[in-house]
Structure formats: C-alpha cells, structure tokens
Image 1 (spheres, rainbow, N blue to C red):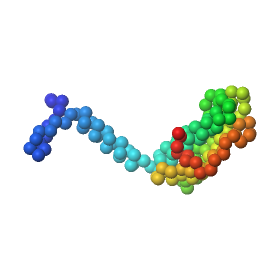
Image 2: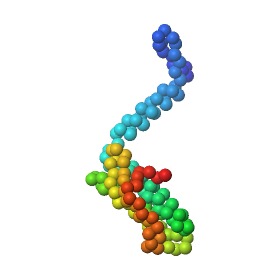
Image 3: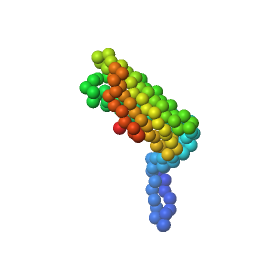
Length: 139
C-alpha cells in the first residue's frame, strides 16, 4: 500500500499524503465538537475562564500592594442559567494576612462575553476595585 494517494484534478495528478488527510479530519472533528457543546458545557468552560481571570486579577492586586501570596488562591465560580456570574478567590499572604477577591456580573456564554465588578482585599482592607471588567480574560 502506498503512503500517498493520487487523484485527477484538471488533468494533473495530485498527491495527497495520509498526514494531510488526518489533519483535515482532526480539524473537522474539532469544529464539530465546538459546535456541539451543550449550554452546561459552555457554562462550565466559562466558569473555568472566570476562575482564571479572577485569580490573575487578585494575584496582580496582591503584588501591586507589595505583598506576596503564600501558595495558590482557592477560586470558585458559577454562571447561572440566567447568565449571572459570581466568583470568589481566597488565600493568604506570606505574612499571614487573608486575601480575598470577588466578581459579580453577567455573562453570555454563547457570545463569549462576560462583564463584572471586581474587588480584592488583604486583611479586610480594599486593595483593588473596578467595574465592568472583562471576566473571561485571564491576561
């Protein structure tokens, strides 16, 4: 069996490798999987983005305050059927102060949009607060 296949196209012989056929099949499969996500799956993916986004913002606020996190933040997020976003992160600084951050906003998982108000505190003192931030953006 040959490692390439041939076909006639406008009177010319065209060679296609099995690799290009495999790549094309994989690309088509990825497109189908993306289109076939349920609302629940899209919300779960959105919640993952919200957790990452909030963790990045809280970490940046801690750093901007001149503090350092002890370990990782513990973050949770939900996107309700109605699009309401709630998220929170908690942690501790290396000096033992409590760190927290929260999002409150709305998301449209079909349109891949999310906007929320964000606050972060260290030792119950506000260190950051913004309104209307993009909460699917972790960077």
